[in-house]
Length: 254
Image 1 (cartoon, rainbow, N blue to C red):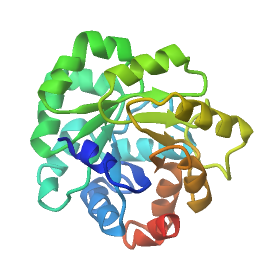
Image 2: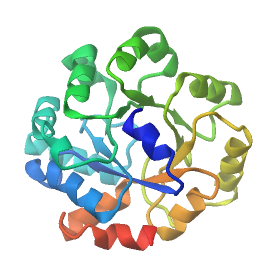
Image 3: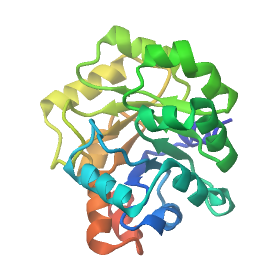
Image 4: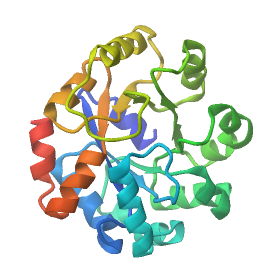
């Protein structure tokens, strides 16, 4: 069983943290991952920086820009992570846009992910239909879970199709905007969370976009299995550095 699937069987609300590989400095990637696991995070999304990140808000865009300036590339990331499974046991998910994966070669990319211990991928600009027709067999060959995004605007029919193709969790985008921390969720989001919960999908949902603290984490996970924090974490390490990450994580999960 894939590490993501194992984690989803645990009886707790899951906290996943997103960060940009190669930020704040190029060689921080492994230290951030190790320190997040020590702090009690359940899963980590490793962002592969891209020059035109359509779904990302200003905080993540700025971290991507800096990481690219620092010299982060797909090849550099794979080299950094080659021994990650000697020290880290929790699920690791690579999140990035499809073009760098195409340039690397989709099968070569998937093979490298399996080799170093990446458990899944999140590719916001790879449509589920294209994935199913052209790439699903490759992902499955290398034991990788592909995680698809849904939004409040996604139709029930499309959601059920995504659910049928998925074998891990569904990334439930809390709103139609780009990523970024918000102070709380309104009625529209609450109704959306309830609507998805009522669909009784076979894959659990993890909520992303707009989660920044204990309050928003608890709101997001009332109906869902977990939540993802990205922008608020990147702001934290921009200000406080990458040591003592329990200072960020503990107030959320305690």
